[in-house]
Length: 267
Image 1: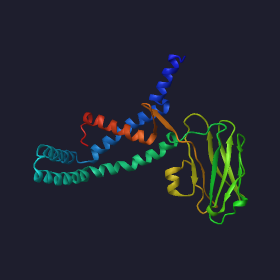
Image 2: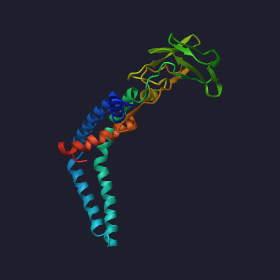
Image 3: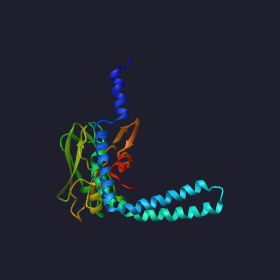
Image 4: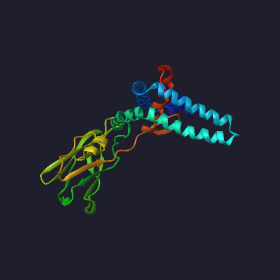
């Protein structure tokens, strides 16, 4: 017979996904408030209010005069113009908030978007080489705690080499790829908590900015990137498993709309 304690523990983890959910909730609420304040001080609040009131008036006209086709058609035209007017006065501040929001999500994804590997959970190390690099000379050097689980697979047509690796114990490791007397390293984490993870190390500025938490490789070198694909992290909330970015957006919007009246912000 299942004990009440175990039942309560299961329900609590299903409805509220522990520490990750608590952190996502707190960050989402703070972000919603910050975005609300940014919108208040970067938008023409009077113009936003006027545009909303005109839209509401035309929507009301459609309901009141729905049996008078000419009135309804004129109201639909005014609704379209009113929507464009609203986007003009409110769109700029929203676009202004997108840049910091995107950079915040990129950084938070290193904690919330992936889970570290577990012992005995095999994973792939994928190295992308520059064209004409000598793939046969590339070797993967593994520290104690990581073991090669299969021979390297060389894909000459794509300039790729793939190794399958099995971790034996917890730890933060550095795998080294040796080629032409040079060594290129990539971090790999085996654990159970919420470490900062980086699935990619690359030469590319934009890939490094958006996908990596490690220093970029030197430009023009024989190794373009090294990748390890961590398992995706899902966060339990209200009985559903959520991608953290979707949950973050939902909670941030709820927080923004919940506090807009208190702060007197027109959205």
